[in-house]
Length: 71
Image 1 (cartoon, rainbow, N blue to C red):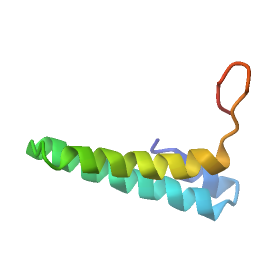
Image 2: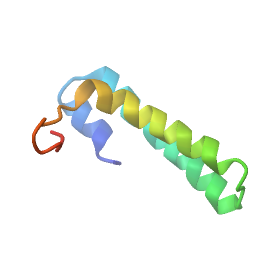
Image 3: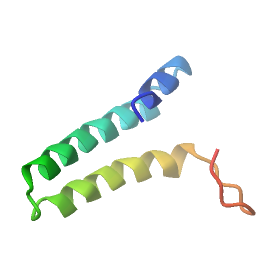
Image 4: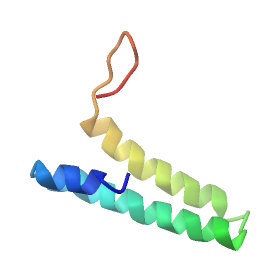
Protein backbone atom coordinates (compact mmCIF):
# COMPACT_ATOMS: atom_id res chain seq x y z
CA UNK A 1 0.00 0.00 0.00
CA UNK A 2 2.89 2.35 0.70
CA UNK A 3 3.78 2.32 -3.01
CA UNK A 4 0.28 3.22 -4.21
CA UNK A 5 0.56 7.04 -3.90
CA UNK A 6 3.76 6.96 -5.96
CA UNK A 7 2.04 4.85 -8.63
CA UNK A 8 -0.71 7.44 -9.02
CA UNK A 9 1.75 10.34 -8.90
CA UNK A 10 3.77 8.71 -11.69
CA UNK A 11 0.58 8.47 -13.75
CA UNK A 12 -0.30 12.10 -12.96
CA UNK A 13 -3.57 11.26 -11.22
CA UNK A 14 -3.83 13.56 -8.18
CA UNK A 15 -7.25 12.44 -6.96
CA UNK A 16 -6.44 8.74 -6.45
CA UNK A 17 -3.00 9.75 -5.17
CA UNK A 18 -4.72 11.81 -2.48
CA UNK A 19 -7.12 9.01 -1.65
CA UNK A 20 -4.19 6.60 -1.28
CA UNK A 21 -2.41 9.02 1.04
CA UNK A 22 -5.60 9.44 3.06
CA UNK A 23 -5.92 5.66 3.31
CA UNK A 24 -2.37 5.39 4.60
CA UNK A 25 -3.08 8.05 7.21
CA UNK A 26 -6.20 6.19 8.32
CA UNK A 27 -4.18 2.96 8.52
CA UNK A 28 -1.64 4.74 10.72
CA UNK A 29 -4.48 5.89 12.98
CA UNK A 30 -5.81 2.34 13.16
CA UNK A 31 -2.33 1.06 14.07
CA UNK A 32 -2.16 3.56 16.94
CA UNK A 33 -5.60 2.54 18.21
CA UNK A 34 -4.68 -1.14 18.06
CA UNK A 35 -1.29 -0.57 19.69
CA UNK A 36 -3.01 1.29 22.51
CA UNK A 37 -5.41 -1.63 22.98
CA UNK A 38 -8.42 0.65 22.59
CA UNK A 39 -11.05 -1.94 21.75
CA UNK A 40 -13.84 0.65 21.80
CA UNK A 41 -12.18 2.84 19.16
CA UNK A 42 -10.96 0.01 16.92
CA UNK A 43 -14.20 -0.59 14.95
CA UNK A 44 -14.54 3.10 14.00
CA UNK A 45 -10.88 3.32 13.02
CA UNK A 46 -11.19 0.17 10.88
CA UNK A 47 -14.35 1.51 9.27
CA UNK A 48 -12.51 4.74 8.39
CA UNK A 49 -9.81 2.70 6.62
CA UNK A 50 -12.44 0.76 4.71
CA UNK A 51 -14.17 3.96 3.67
CA UNK A 52 -11.06 5.48 2.13
CA UNK A 53 -10.20 2.21 0.40
CA UNK A 54 -13.73 1.86 -0.96
CA UNK A 55 -13.73 5.43 -2.27
CA UNK A 56 -10.73 4.71 -4.46
CA UNK A 57 -11.63 1.14 -5.43
CA UNK A 58 -15.13 2.19 -6.44
CA UNK A 59 -13.81 4.77 -8.83
CA UNK A 60 -10.41 3.56 -10.03
CA UNK A 61 -10.49 -0.23 -10.14
CA UNK A 62 -12.15 -2.39 -12.75
CA UNK A 63 -13.59 -5.76 -11.84
CA UNK A 64 -13.77 -8.62 -14.29
CA UNK A 65 -17.40 -9.79 -14.18
CA UNK A 66 -16.42 -13.43 -14.69
CA UNK A 67 -13.43 -13.88 -12.39
CA UNK A 68 -14.33 -11.05 -9.96
CA UNK A 69 -10.63 -10.07 -9.98
CA UNK A 70 -9.66 -6.40 -10.04
CA UNK A 71 -7.22 -4.60 -12.29
